[in-house]
Image (cartoon, rainbow, N blue to C red; front, side):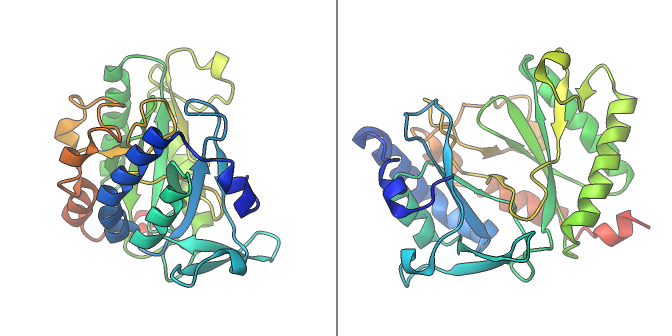
Length: 282
């Protein structure tokens, strides 16, 4: 984690890389602000170069934020209040100009940071694309059994997340407990395809399921964010009919303009409509 603005300056990219990142967020910022306005924003930096482990800027001191930023006050687990910068177009570009590559959040409701707009179930595989597609479709079928629908989001590396939006803003603790039980059932039903095993060497070629990011103060990449691999891949929401035809890394900071002509995430959210977690728990 980066603690201060001096640390941010150490995260500067080479000029051509930074230009690509800034140009990408000039295109992506309106979509991100449309879909996630004012959520607590975490930014990632690659001080040792793209492809190296990132460091993160999470909380801010009030004096670090320009008056044009929107501060978001979050109650931490120890009863402390932490200040995050709220996602706006201006904030995204301000961070990108200062060397940020990735934009992340835990996607809470802006009315209540303890309540979630939806949960993410992450899957990652070392196998070829069809297995990730099969895993996503398998989880979708199980979600459909309880009348839930999801948005597939390719993570820019070797995995995907299913984002399940909610309209009734349930609390994270309740959602996380339900989600753990859901993933356990999925692994029991499809043991040859899915696993929750913690150690990578024990997973074999199965798709690993993770739900850790569904908690206040934890975070994962937002749709249309960049990831810090050498390609500067874009986190890409895809339609279910596109899942087999779009690979991780197909869209990057270099060619994102065409994909960003549409807000696929917003379109799919609108098509899903109102989903209520309270109905699922009955």
